[in-house]
Length: 498
Image 1 (spheres, helix red, strand yellow):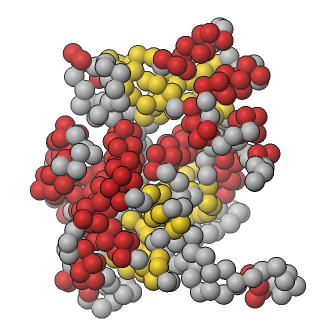
Image 2: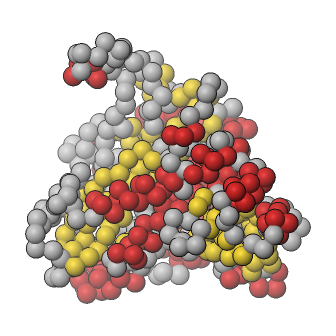
Image 3: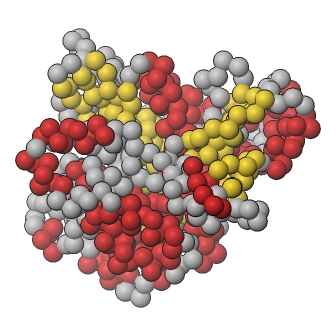
């Protein structure tokens, strides 16, 4: 089958005429040589989730070949607080499939994401990116299935208030310009993300918008397409970087923080999962949710309180997880239910051609009974999430669910129909943690599930527990109700999370 590489927005794909997963060292050298690119930047996330940079000025093809082959040394203790300074030297080694052109550099430069290796030349056990890789591989080996994932990235743009065409408070969902002031920035971000290799489903304005004095806050969302967990994480990292660069150019502020203001919509980072076997989506069977999906959902629900340790990492995270804010508070699941912790979104299972109904002149629109787009969604994480660790945790919970003897019964017991607050279903359900401190306690109780699986090193689990406890925020919600000024100070303190 012919590959139409010219349709790709990624200039490397167009030039090399391969999918990124097939890129080789020689492909990168050929592209850089053929396009006279003499700057190369290694990129990798530190503990704070932000992309770090190591710059190279290439002076010969042998120099470029050496860097791409051997990588370089970095100080791990300055990137990760859990590394000791006495033994902190790490290697960063490029992953060729992640290469992209820097869309902001005046001088053409190549960016490439890296993996961490220890002094023995082995993948660093403690590196979050390698923990996610281990989780994805273990899921495949243990189940014979693949889990594809995608993220929904929500963010606020903070700018001076404009008098023309003011938006309606908390009614920004799918709003358009001129009422959505930063639609142009979102569309530019989509274009640049696609050029950098991102596989994007869509973008739109979100519910949240409000004004405070002379400041206006406007919420947007960008959702990606299902791909391997490792690539899904890379996409989110690059997307956050692109959005922040655009914001800097426009002299406005962008925040992925879980809460910008109490009483207003927060920034979630929902993750969708898609199960495949032999290349086929098996989330549904005979237009009903498959037993494999139900077991995985049961595993996620069983581990959901502990997963907040990776997905909700700031005190302000727990100001988002409150009733009536389209964020989950109780451990349950449902179909098309935004108050549920795990949601089965509307799928394409009607076996009718909706396109044919509104386009009668097009006789090529036949019924489509395929179900290759159905996913299920974990709605707890927010913009403070450690992207690699929360995704690894979700996969770990999925394996746990597939091995639980009573998984199907648990799934049945925790299913809710409709809004849980309308029929008092919530009274029989367990709640999510209400603070970082409580999240640490839940992880402490269930840490054996993460460590015994062989996916999470105990050092990462213990470090996470200690870090969450250090916030000492056990009574935060009550304190915020009584002190609005403290609430605002806390929001500002954590405005630039991850």
